Image 1: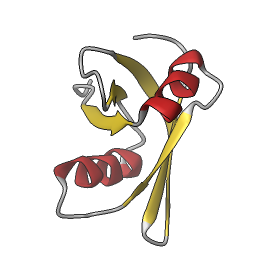
Image 2 (image 1 turned 45 degrees about the horizontal axis):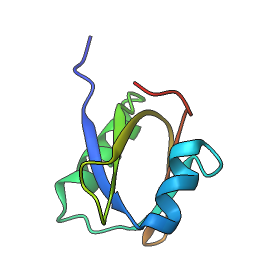
Image 3 (image 1 turned 180 degrees about the horizontal axis):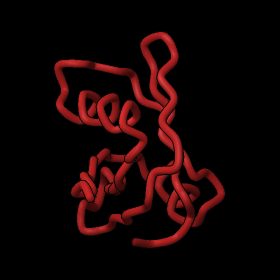
Length: 88
């Protein structure tokens, strides 16, 4: 059994609350393959073991939540990361 890797991203306050409450259970990010987070997401997608995501409030880093990733979709230079709305 593989270790579940967690990736972290910061979210602006206007997005953070809908994401945390489950109204917007995903995030879209511009891909930078020199960033280890995107490398890890691509690797995890290939082995169908997506791991977890932690979303951190960009204005108050003490506020964050962690969810199990349910889908990672790469499209052109973007990635959509979706998660299950259950705290892990």
